[in-house]
Image (cartoon, rainbow, N blue to C red; front, side, top):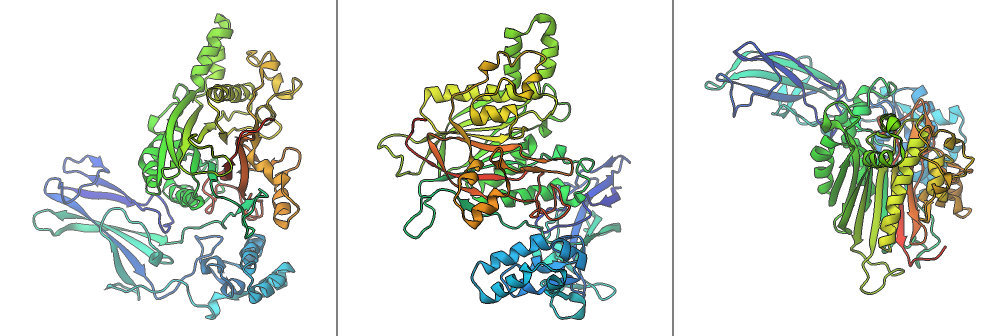
Length: 592
């Protein structure tokens, strides 16, 4: 007879909006084990499985710490209560938690004060003193009954033992926690049922979760105007402009607890991260989205269908698999999405650096060295180039009857620090391909992605300056001689890094704040990748400055924004990279 051997949950912490699917191990009538579902519609030997989810509702009201969402809150910030800061951001689990998070938390008060409320401004003056005593004067203990819980009680349906009530919330194997579940424990029940009598057979197997927590969310990042063009009301002129997002989302295959041991396991799970990433991406409302490290299966099963609901058309280029060993469904690649109401697809080019490596070795490498050369050059990296046609007008650049085309390149360059020659060769190969497209059409270009190269490196110099200094130390690593002669390492695309626009902003407080988050030597962000082992810039959005101008940029993060002693990924930020977002406007082509 069918029986349940074991039930457990893949994640110890349930989160609002993140699907819960228990692992149910069954024993078939033939004594073999399986994890396949046995629904009522397809009984096995006259039996099927029945599932129930319950909310174990306690009279005790629980608030969750906004910094450590797996812990119960004991303090509440009174400043948040008196302002428009979301109440869930006001809870902390200890005095140390609140003081450690203060530099991040005070930003919430500053933004509330910017709305012009006198009471909020008074709180801001108090907060600005920065002393521990003044900070702690703004919190209240939740144990003295002075603050009511933000989570209301739900209507109960069934009474359990010990003063608790069971509220049935689901009848399928999978359940997605809701806001009403926050602070409560969930109970999963699985039982074998006779298909004919509909009676339970044997004992039910149950499992209890920890308390449900709200999905942690980072403080919103604002778009900062960098163009001097404003309308009559002093607002940035944006009619005819478009926005581009570039984001390495950290493939699940690479998100291991061994590498990211500092990130809670529940926050590292794909079921959690995918929802958090989707919320973040959708919130930016970008017209074009360039993602890297998108797994093949996640593109097909999640990102393409989910972003389709938000009006995006999807294109994907999977990495090649000559080096990769494993399930090909988990190979990652580059995914480009565009809003159907803003752009239409004209053409797609797929760049496989492995193919370019084959051509290079056939042409330049002596036969005895071909195998060694291919072992060094073949790394499965790719680029996806898409030509789009704008459906919107642009008064500054419109020529009656002329189509407004845009070329967008999305790439992920090889990660190995030792293969400096391979990184530079891949970037040079991509740029030469883009030059051919530029020669065939007068078209603005964007080059986005994770280049796995820091500012002032040879690949960055090639992108930003159009050439590499023959004395650059990176050129010393060239065992195959593929970078010689060094004079060939050039291109003629007038590329400029979008985020360098922050360095050219005026003297406003906002401009100064962003400049502090920039490297003055390279005019690039101080970091776009932040882990315990590395903090630096690897991601860029380059644009052709003779056909495009930057209107605004997504504000940069600083280390305080990531909270003290925190690296990425984290419960708030679900990748080890940060997203880059730029607003552009097409303009009549200018001569440099």
